[in-house]
Image (cartoon, rainbow, N blue to C red; front, side, top):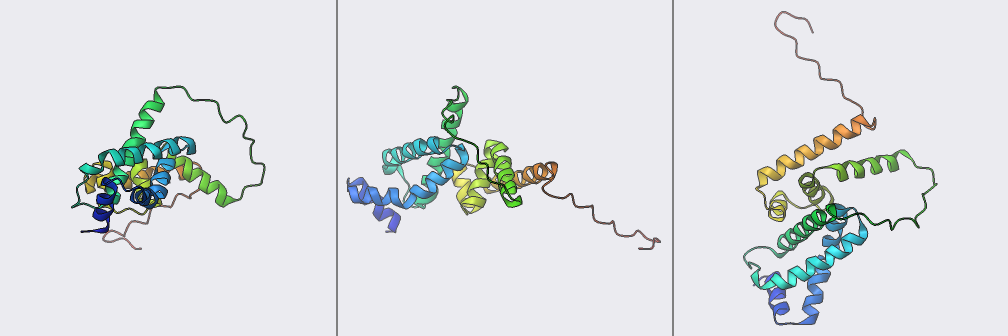
Length: 192
């Protein structure tokens, strides 16, 4: 019996300490993924709660032959997708009026981080999901595939396309220099 299996069994018996342990084990990762995919801390908090409600409702269906973490992360990604589709159909609330702009001078690294974050946020949902799970959460291709419900080859393709789009945006914004095309090797009879 694995540690995951033992924890799930204790949770299914209604042991409150085990339920708290399960939440504590995954809460940071789930919240981080939700915050990154939703780009809003308040929404991420709400969705994180929904994720754990869904986890506990579905815990009896978890396949003990598979690791628990990718299963939980799959639920998190799916809850984010549902939230984003619902958010697209309702108007935004103007709850940021109390925030004032930051007047501190920004250095180049701050500008680069801001541009990268904006570029990631502008990616198609599928590309952003795999990019965030791979680069920001260190998940393997297999774990990401399980989380987004796609084969590893698709995950790799989406990740590659996400990187190309990010690079293109950074070049367009003048933050990354266009590299000159490498010189073609000399053809027969030409001097280098």
